[in-house]
Length: 300
Image (cartoon, rainbow, N blue to C red):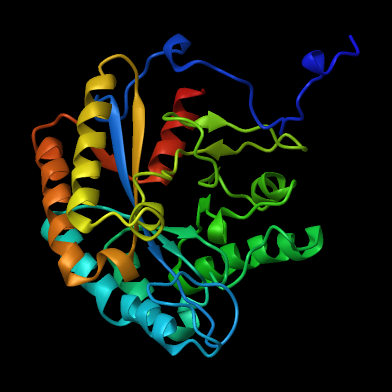
């Protein structure tokens, strides 16, 4: 029909609609139904140019105030969070810019040495990739994978775009570069098999946009106590829902936010709550790469 009410709305073609109450039931490797992972973002920013989150008024470049706040993450905040992860024996997915290898390789090495998964996160968070040409975007995605493999002897399985920026072919390029999964899509509580133009396999592992300190603390002005309450409340409700279906809960953290002492104490409370459930055998604390591999094992 010609009526606008019958016009098909443009779509992305990456996956079909699927209601969560009408899907196969399975379990994670330890037999649990709720898989939790920590996505710990470690990012490096250009001085005097480009993009960057801000904690104070944006100043003309060079914006020393906001740049120095972001640099605190690499010198102090990330190390304090690392101590907490060690204290609670929590694995993480360290989501890294490859510019860190030039600026603070010791920090990347500390996460790699504890056996954490390294997730490719572009070269720097001062730049978006969605506006690049296809050739330049492909070169970035491939170069990041090769750099992590060369520097850390770990072939990254996952990709998260800086600022979650995508072109129309990002998922295709990520799959063609040999990545197993993407974290760019936050549309579900279960992994989704993505359609790619040449048929290469690619999982979308759920990455949170609400259990995420940037939108909650910077955009919605939530304090750290309330954010910790949010993490706990979200966890408890997902644990309840997981009695019916397997679920994935990601917790997205950034060192320049949660590495601040007044926030770290509240993060400790939230992670202690989740670690207790792990110790009681009620949940699986894992990494997105392990989740993707389990989905491949199940043949979903």
